[in-house]
Length: 237
Image 1: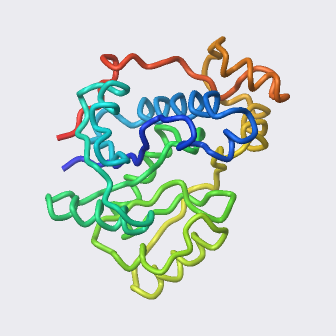
Image 2: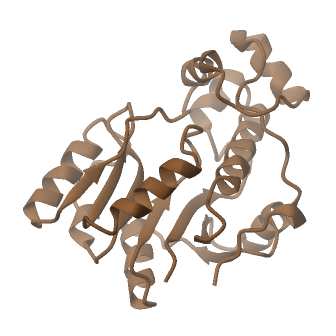
């Protein structure tokens, strides 16, 4: 059975996504950044992997399909904190017979196809794969067996998330591997650092990229080609 990638996304509504970035550059512009990052991330998932969109809020499935197309399986996120939502998603995937499962978001533009392949390959030999983020969290978690304890009693959105998760890994006597450390884009400073690396795709000349330039980023390195809904080819099953 192919690796399953569960991509956790929110409906792209100004003021509800990329809120820290929105306070610095405007919520409409930050939402455009969010949309581009999410679309880019979906394009980087290997074709042979299965992809699911785990969306929020409840009732937004039509909005998500209008944005990303109908070729994905869409599953609504359960209520609760991030840990409760991921714990439920992993449990349900294992109940459906999945054996190699990766959960990601859309905040890390450096998370590319080779990195996802590396994570899947590691899951053939270890129980847990984690992608450390520079802020003390993680941009990816992969499991090959149920491990609900990894999502319990975690202070989410703090600098202790990765360290506490690794404590849980040791507590549960699970084997693990770490990918290379990467930075999430959560604020304008991170966006500028990403721009300085020159690692992103083509620049889209629109109001959002103009706003980034206005805030001192030069060319908008985060901007990628827009994905038309019908062009998204990753199908879940």
